[in-house]
Image (cartoon, rainbow, N blue to C red; front, side, top):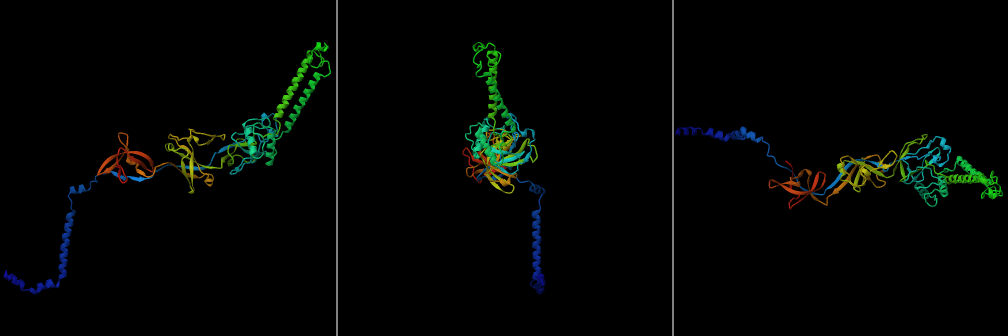
Length: 490
């Protein structure tokens, strides 16, 4: 041992050289050893048994899917697509000939044998007011008046009824006062009609040549009957029409004015002839004068009106509808599913937005059976219910939305989105997604919430539902507050 120490000690210079002169090499050696050790530790930590590997690939334990209970305001609405249209469409059809009395007047005119032709057609898009000329047929005007009773006959002296009263009221509004609106057409009405026509540049339909000829014939018949009666009475003769043959002293009873049965019969016949002639003349005179032909006036329930479509052109025969008129007001027509319609009723507020971004507030004015639908005769009909309330069923239900006058007029014929507000909460309320609400075996609504790691049922009353959320109010002293975690799935 001493020799060994001595031997080592015999070479002190070399040892000092290794240590003192090469410290970098020592550092490298130490670092390499440390790296090898760390790698061994890492490799050992990553090594797993087959059981550990299988366990690490198992899915995590399933838990409930929850959402946070919120406090917010709810507004429920029904959304539908619709179209902007002019309101109250109605077909216009002429009630008879233009420029010629109808066949029931007892007279005829030139128009009876001449084809009726449109000489000036209506113009689409034009607004017509009371008293305006709608079109011309065979050079005669077709005039527009306001009234609910449609034109259905020629009106002239002697005619009476609601249509005549309607004419009288219209003439008064236009400044051609015919006097009392008693519903009976008289000479004052005929004069007012003549003044009205002249103001439009036309002559009213006065008696035709045939009418005048007929009047002359009837007057001549009365004159002839009077002469026959005078001859039968033969003033100053033996028979004055009051006695018999014995009283007259004639005894012959053969000729007029001579008494007898033959004279009596002749006198009676003359009296009857005169009475009949006077009755015929009186009846004709009652209807004789200026008339309003059936085809020359169109009554419309609302004026002014807008000419929406025109069905005839110049040269056509005006048979069937000649035009379609609408109100100057704009409405939005939409259709909603039957289930949504159960939530709607007249008077609900609506918001309309057209394709170009124009918006307008509106109101539900017709629903289901109360939405007007024009039939082939131009009369507004009703579909379905007529009580004006809400409707049900699964079939689509028409809805009409009114908008303020002047709104959306430029958007006619465009499509629009309609949003109808059906209800709103009273301020902020507790809400959960509809998926969080369920019905238990006792048929009561409940919401499940997670508390202390457990799922518990909270009995609630459901309220307004909107945008996938439903209003909930805890019952039976149960606690539910904003921030609770409601279960919507597992």
